[in-house]
Length: 412
Image (cartoon, rainbow, N blue to C red; front, side, top):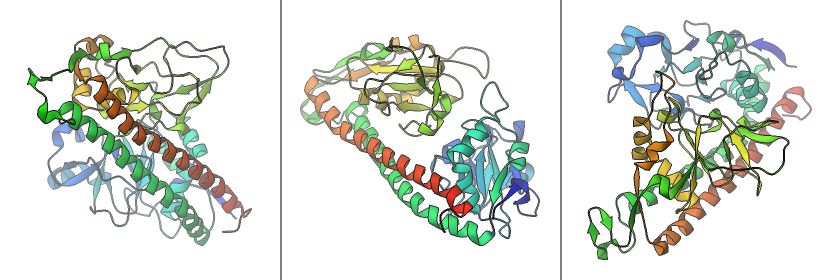
């Protein structure tokens, strides 16, 4: 039998069992060092069960002792997003390579009382789509989405006895093992596409490059063109008829990969002016979303359907290049840094100027080479789409199981 419990009732009986990140100037980019204690940021919560150990920044031991000792997280703790992409949650794994972490200003952490709850069970409850929607509905900011620490402390979840929690977590972990494996394959496929792009179009080590003369950085038979010539920037996309339309909010875009979070999608009666179709790239134009890398490749819509999205997106569509080339260009550091330099506006609300793409230049290959590239990377993108669909089905089955296992409708 489950009982509704507040999250702070399930926390360890120790100081700082549920805490958020440091306030204000206690932690800034100026405090980052090359090695030390890792800082957990949004990029380390990428939708998986466990904390991602890619792309850490660090603070020194001295800085931690002086200002951040109350913001530490350790193995087995649960990390939640407080500001930004609300609904993200992850566990610091038992075999994590670090014994201490600092929680950034955008995250919160909970140390679970092992006599009251299984951290995996709490993770599964908070990763449910219904729970995520409930958290998002508590957003307290008109700008960057934000919830306060009190919301997390007071959040209630139905909790069965501990042994039942452990058995439920064991069952659901089987699904997550499959999902994690697919996520790893997706990351490898996208990295393969990015590496091929960089090899051919940045390093200019394309097939046969040894026999091609390069003049002023441009290989023979290639063209140097503005991005706004190669791409359509914010193209007009009419839709047939009225009625409900799929809406993509900023939080649906990933900071690290092409996939758009379908759990974050909404259905609206009125379309925004920002409309797009399969194959388009969604590129965040506002700070800090752009700096954080929010970019998505649209490939989830039914054939012929048009969707709309946040007015803080710039839509990029291939004109003289493929949709894959567009997305992979948008993921290049140089492309993003150039867009960031074009930003204007008040502090904290600066936006990219679409006209900046008139002055960002790309190298376009001959048609024969472009076709070979498109055929190669299209297979990567298609495999990512299929694996993502598999993960959706697995996650839906997992989410359906959790309440039925808890109610006893299905025996553990």
